[in-house]
Image (tube, rainbow, N blue to C red; front, side, top):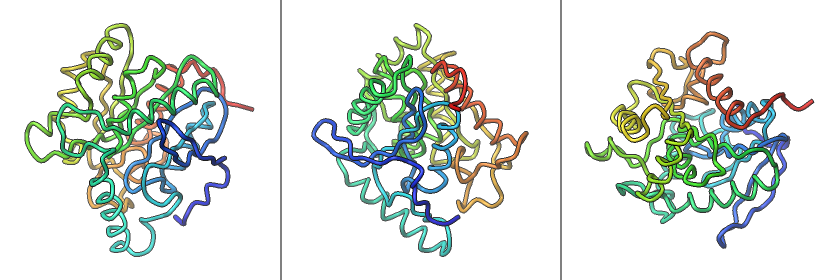
Length: 275
């Protein structure tokens, strides 16, 4: 896969809470905020956003880190590893991301909530969806403290880093945000999560904790490692919706992707794709 020019998206700078970031949009219909995994908006993440747009939604990709459209996995694997580690290191020293803190929402989620509110006004519909991945997986949960967020998807949520047992059973959401999400779940909100069974970055105890906190409102999908793409550039299965996807009907990862798209369709009341 080569670099993605992203030229089928419209791009503009969006300012919220005094912070300006580049935002890419594609499609029409209710907004779905696609929050890229490390190391950024790769071609695989952009392809997922295109599927969301094909669904009949407006895919909205904010640029939080990395080089937009860059194929860090192609070519030299050593270079890809260096690029990923460098991007992660920059994020780790940023005050916008809660890397190790327990019981805390990453500060950047406030910006994302403001973006979601603006996109809801722009795009209409009953509300907004959000798909977080890896480093940003838990962001969709914290965003769901806002009533406009109707379809939160947590793909392999990886924060806080699983360095202790407490960290493995935690997810990056503050107490107030969690209480708001739990209250919404009691009234019908659903939260979807995905991970590979052997993924130590998004550990099983984290999903058990989400089941404990959210009850039947949490829809957890845990995929056997053997179902990941054999052509994945990652050393171990991790990215459920992107580079570890086997994009063939009937394959477990494709079935999981289809479940995510159907979840977005149902929760956002999307009746048909744009013509």
